[in-house]
Image 1 (cartoon, rainbow, N blue to C red):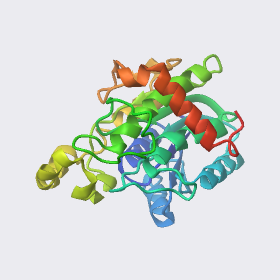
Image 2 (image 1 turned 30 degrees about the vertical axis):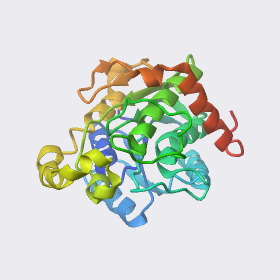
Image 3 (image 1 turned 90 degrees about the vertical axis):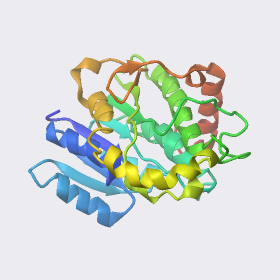
Image 4 (image 1 turned 60 degrees about the horizontal axis):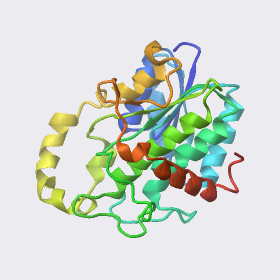
Length: 287
């Protein structure tokens, strides 16, 4: 990775930060993105302490105007971008809208990767890695893409729903950029005891899981505390020679190519999600 530049959203903590740590260790120049300027500075100082090339840009990438600003600042700092890792995540306990009127988890997990990847295409010379997470793979509800009907249910959560939508959108994006030298793949990290997960209240879980939340609080630090493990799949897709030229693929937490869920492969789902993203970014992205 020496001589290569990587941009990672949501990388001032959690899996994104560990992904950055892994890529810095391989010699990459890494640009962190986070919305808290203190955490961004501290993360850049920590990861660059051993002589690595690490810098940070502050942006709340759930806001379209800040996604545009981020793309502008990246273009000012770089003449090329070798890897974009769309890692940022959000999991509010109830349906919440951004300043653009977009449901927050849809904005973070689907619209932001769609928008930022489009805006950075002129700079991109290599790989786009999109991170799914949670328990993806369930049905995609076309009349509930932004949680208009329900945000949580007995087993349903908009978090998992949007992570599955990300997979469908990524497949469509891989087709769009085929033959350009840019690849788009999806990594599943598995579970991690991240700051976002630690801050989740019981009310943010589907109803069936709420009784076991106290047990999860006790077990999670022991079972999922080592965040280098869930970062392995994104580091692999960002750096490994084994995936050079591979696009439109889904990789498990063990860094192995695995089957896509049927809902992500469904062309009707892909089209509906892509069209919604286009409509929401009509004034932002030139396709």
